Amino acid sequence: MNFKVAIIGAGPAGIMAAIQASQSGASVVLIDKNLGKKILLSGNGRCNLTHSGLTPFEFSQAYGKNGSFLISALTEFGPEQFLKYLNNLGLKTQSQEDGRVFPKSNKASDVLDILIDQLVKNKVKIINQLVKEIKKDKNKIKSLILENGEEIVADSFILATGGKSFPSAGATGEGLIWAKDLGHTIINPRPSLVPLKTKETWPTQLQGIGFDDVEIILMENNKKIAHQRGEIVFTHFGISGPAVLNISRDIINLPAQIVLDFYPNQSFDDLSGAIEKDFSSNGKKSAKNILVRIMPERLAETIFENIGCDVLQKPEGLSHECKHNLVKFLKSVVLTITETLGFEASMATNGGVDLKEIDSKTMQSKIIPNLFLAGEIMDLSGKTGGYNLQMCWTTGYLAGKSAARN
Image (cartoon, rainbow, N blue to C red; front, side, top):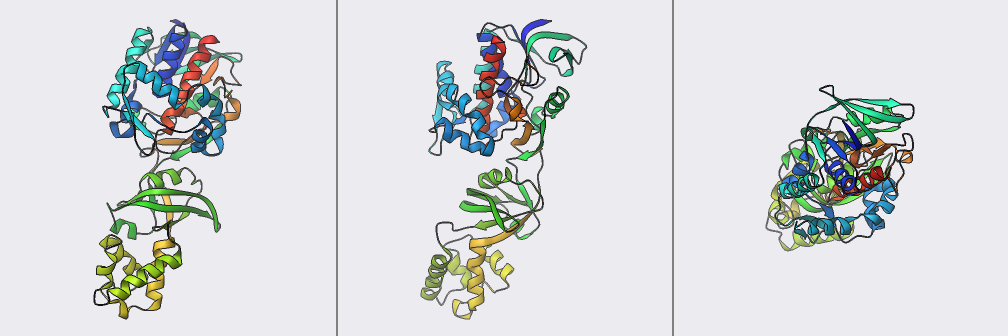
């Protein structure tokens, strides 16, 4: 079978690439056994489409040191252009106060249905198979061999197979192996946006309890490496929640140490003074009954157990050391991260094809001239909140248009 553009991978990047290439007049084949499954899983089935209200530069900051690669692409097809595109297709969207954007129906299936409709209207050939082999002739890709033995010949090829996260959606990391075989450098992939396991057991005593505004500081050799601020949740294995997922992107070496500040808006002295004032004006109550007004009961019990003090003691019976250690725990308790929950629980992949080998304006490979790359196969990983899906829409858009022109 002969096509102008052949795309491996039918996640958000691959689907967007197929739509744009076909709308540019190219004959397109889209190959994957899990058409759009990652879209259905995103945002817990709600599909966090993108993040609104940011300039291309501001948006690029969500991807860390590699974010500058996306500025040009976001200028051409960023959140504003993408949402306008969806609205023109009839999909109504809603922006939340925090900038996250969802379909108004809160159904990821509505997003996928509209995109599949575009694939059909533009006569994209969809093949529900796996690619077994990529054949190369000199410095170009010649064809693809499917698992049933059929050969797909094309002028341009797009790798949009994703990273290694979302194995439930069919991600295997095989695209990274193909890219390496084709001559690309692969930055070692590791789980990103993933819950963390702790050496300490006290977080398990707080299982199910969440905090809306906690600062997390990642430390290495007593130096601050990264920080995040936001919601965290304690679990049966350690910690999770948006702020935890975001800090996981910066953890390279394990074990790692993080510091939690439960009261980031107050200094140590201010918090100490506030608690001392509460103790002084409620001297007949136990420490626990006083503290439950500013924190969950289980947290108060856990802290006192860890600092070796009696939470049922009245304030007058608490030593200065107990009060000091209480505030120290709330402002700077240290957790040791032993491991992550792995790719099975990760929402994105850190690492992938080295961005130095990709043209940021076209997504064209600098190694193989008729190869284009899109989505999480590249060394790009953003924060939670719609950034990773937008990266897929943006790079898929450019890869599709560029491959059709090529």
